[in-house]
Image (tube, rainbow, N blue to C red; front, top):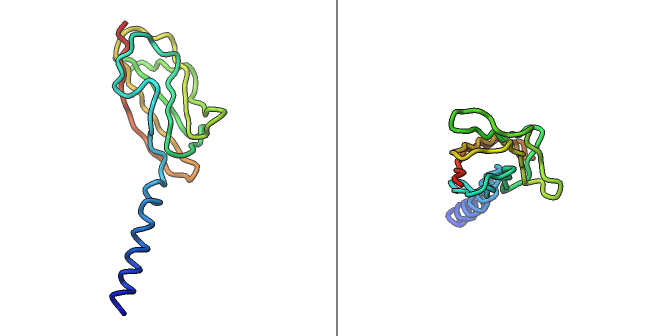
Length: 121
C-alpha cells in the first residue's frame, strides 16, 4: 500500500512539471528571424512569446555593429495579441544587428535574450 501511495504522489508531482515549465514567457519566434540574412532592411522587429507579456515593463533594444541603438521609440505590445512585443526601427544600413529583449510576463516572471540578424542588400 505504501508503494502505491508513493507512486501516486510521484505521478501527481510529475504531472505538474509541464505547467511549471510554461510559467515564463520564452521567445517563440521573431521577425526578422534569429540569424536571418536579409536583402532588405526591416522597418520593425516583432517578437512572439509563449505567453502574454507586460509591454510597460518590457523592452527591445536593437544595436548596430558599433553598439549604437537603432530602434525608433519604445517597444509596444500588439493590439491583437498580448504575447507579441514590437519596436519600430530607424532606417538601417547594410550590416549586422543585435536584438536584446527583456520581458515581464503577465504572471510576473522575467526572461531575456539576444539574437542577431544581418542586412546585406
